[in-house]
Image (cartoon, rainbow, N blue to C red; front, side, top):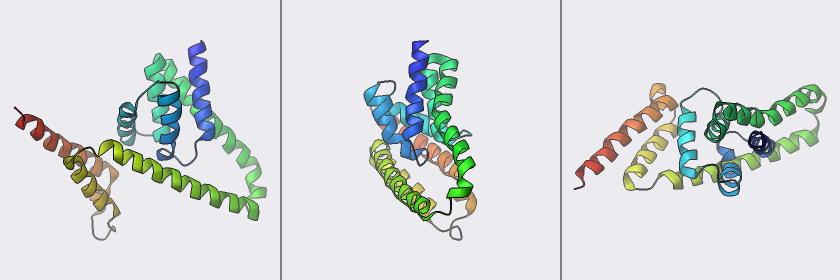
Length: 188
């Protein structure tokens, strides 16, 4: 039972200190789950992110589920997920009660502006860390540049089907299968 409580509280803590969505949580995952507890490693986290990108739901909730499942099975996955969403759901309920009266206050608007700036900085830090973690050779860099280039081009230049995250992820996976298989097959 102690293991489940530890799992729940670890994800409650992460749920309390994480703002900005899936990518902003990478530094928190690194600190809390990799360095502090040793429950996972960055390669596994990258695999979880990859799977979470193509499965329904929020990235970070899926990661909580994966880590909880790895630690304690199905019930661990449920406990970790509930632990992570508990703070957010609680805050949303409180905000829903009070937001109508507070949203127009300049102080609240300024605070949200500052929060958005901080979240942007956290996401940029995460992106830099993710790029360093996955772009390990020239072939990976080529795939990265192509996908990034397609994703930032205006919709009028690139068909929307090609800009779809699903299309980009599938195409990247196929390209990696081809490029990295050739490299392995060509080695003696």
